[in-house]
Length: 311
Image 1 (cartoon, rainbow, N blue to C red):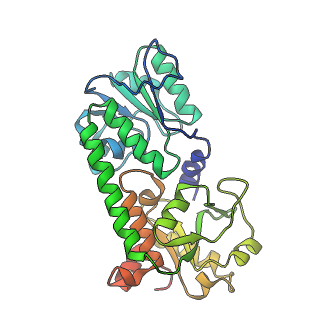
Image 2: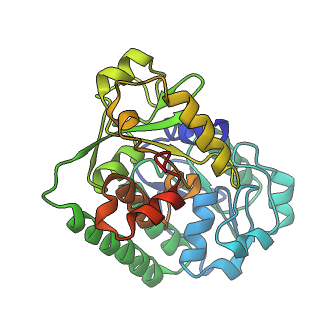
């Protein structure tokens, strides 16, 4: 369960408030928003940034991605420049980028500082919440001279989400417990983009406000929360059956929890729901199918695909 817990935990470290275009000779605090004119060589330092670049039609300009950048499939053919947590500055320099796009947590912010000092342009973006996704799309579009594509991409995402909201409008909300790690048990609280997706899908977080992001909780808190649905993102691709079995064994002891009683426990695609990027509508729809399968047709077959433990 560790990979996605680490990636999600990083969200709590990011600074709110948009983006900064860092250029050699400019102060880090500057937010000029004016990137190089049509950079033809771009390095992406996170899987969701890679997805944004490709969704903007800039895939042919991408010359470096992180190890976990595996979507779209074409990203698999791009040179690797380290990991999300441990960027390889030598590999980045070898890619001869005109623009490096990084996230705003400290490891990548420090990478941007180092790159700017030696002459490279960097765009540092913050994607903590859904609004930050649209800010980031606009910022990348501006830096890469792809403003029209950025407006189109944001518009398509918003339209699809609005349609999903319409499908559940007026229905009672479903209480959801979102699990990011089982040992110890950690959940996604309310002040997260995961919570935003749950609400967009017609649900509500079963756990009330918490002092920490992704806090550990005990069995008593799970029982008191009374979730009607429990959702776990798939942590390792190709391990759906194994994670389903483990989840069934773990949750079976919570005999008074409605989600367990009614066998409404789901293991879903971790990439789609854990990367805040262009596949946001797919993530919201995946959650909505767990909460209201009857609204999407052929519920039994679809729930089998999602990994419900009730089949």
